[in-house]
Length: 376
Image 1 (cartoon, one colour):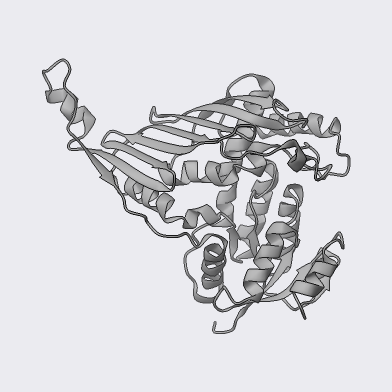
Image 2 (image 1 turned 180 degrees about the vertical axis):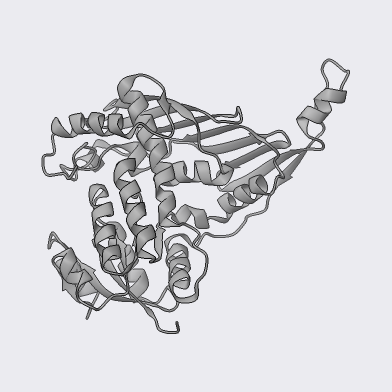
């Protein structure tokens, strides 16, 4: 295919508006903005000013059936992501979905089945997979340079949000409006990267979720989770929106050393020989393996959202491999669902997830939510 890919953006709030502007301004080669959809009508004036000449539709079906677009980017509220994506896929359109793929694993599983049956290109806006720092971490793990994974530890608490932030909308930080708090709103990228960089999903999770601990909200604003993997490795994930100053430090420990990503830099403490080999031959009580500290230089800027848009466009037009396949959105979501379920039940959550139990527990919280116009 040599033509340009015509995008329609569904939802032109903060994130959708940025995507629309990137496409309109030619930031993505061989792609163009062809139409947008503003269901609420609150952004119509903005669209007329900043997206001149671009058709603005008031309903999703009108945009999908317009014949103006080849692909859509969905940037609607969390609960609506799977519905909008499925509607587009069933009309033969390619779909790039904003994160998270949805609120529940069961609903996203159905979306994945629709995507596979359609044969269309389906991607997710996991723009942090474009970050060269995390790509290097993944490379060192997948290539075997780090050896067998033993432990992971991610402290990501630099999500500070004040009460004023939550007060900007009655839907914010509610079970019916967003389907969760820091896990579903702020952390989808980190939960995805946690499994993507290691290539592993836990077999069970024990999470301690605090709901409305620091703010007047009904969802979680602090989480500490412990994960166990099939190979015996363990992991810890800590996050909150109520801490200042915050931390963002990610460690992956293998039997050949340790990787640490912090403050935008990557350090590799590499063992000269695998720890099990050293331990087998060592006879000195307080000896330890020889270790080399490798500080990677600045790995360069990340193309972020434009990078994912470009990769998606190249996948449609030129058959390139997707960096963030839409079907993989279910993996990070499985982690957040498991953490929620563990917190709700005060027990371990096994993976694959007990989807019936999760849906039942979520439904209870939606029913008592202060926001009554959400979609379950």
